[in-house]
Amino acid sequence: MRYNKVRKMDISNGPGVRVSIFMQGCTFHCKGCFNPETHDFNGGKEFTKDTIEHVLELCDKEYIVGLSILGGEPLHPKNREGTLELAKAFKERFPKKNLWVWSGFLWDRDLKDLEIMNYIDVLVDGQYQSELYSPLLRWKGSSNQRVIDVQASLKKKKVVLFEEEGVLV
Image (cartoon, rainbow, N blue to C red; front, side):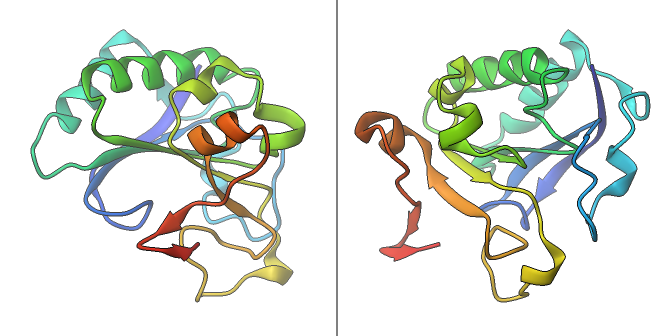
């Protein structure tokens, strides 16, 4: 597995100041993707235990509220094991910080039964569709995508949308 880059202070991919990692490799190739350099599974850098430790060290600052995992496609079968390892290590070390993941796969069709869902707080699911783009959307690029409260969805066994300060996102 490979990753493209790590941002040590990101304010655009989830609420607050966060650390973000962009996994390498995606088969969706959405028209208008904001990150096409992450599509090639052979690009980027090798994802290792040192990568996980580096990300966790960056998260170990009081002002960092969470970790965002994007891509590429972090939940592609080729990337799931490493993404799970990172998610698990993050939540074990920082149980009070939140974990956001972006995926072109759909929670209810493709992802809800994966072990990694036990560690994700918010999932933005669905493939980006350029014809449904709006700059007014929060945390997602197109209106078909959903911002899902994963833990509430697991409890209710149905999609529960994430609310930020009482407002559905």
